[in-house]
Length: 59
Image (cartoon, rainbow, N blue to C red; front, top):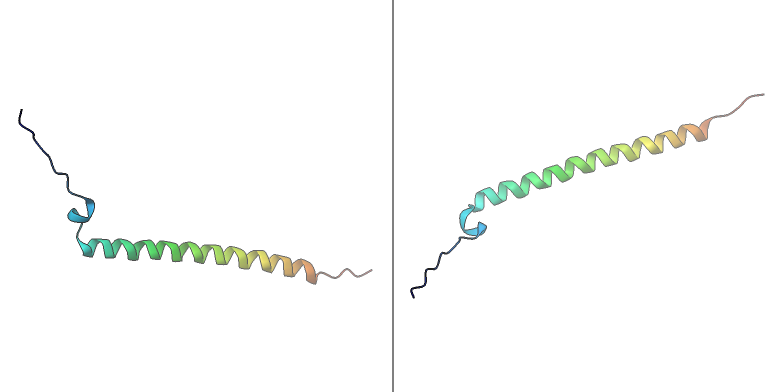
């Protein structure tokens, strides 16, 4: 009986290095964009707390 072997290339063999670099940079930019959204949300929460603390009731 004859044996037939089929070799399936790995993604590293198919995808060019330049593509990998672009994808890594794009992923980094997505993370930076998300960090910007999170930082802005934190800033707004802190500003609301400060406004509540500055309220003075006059009788």
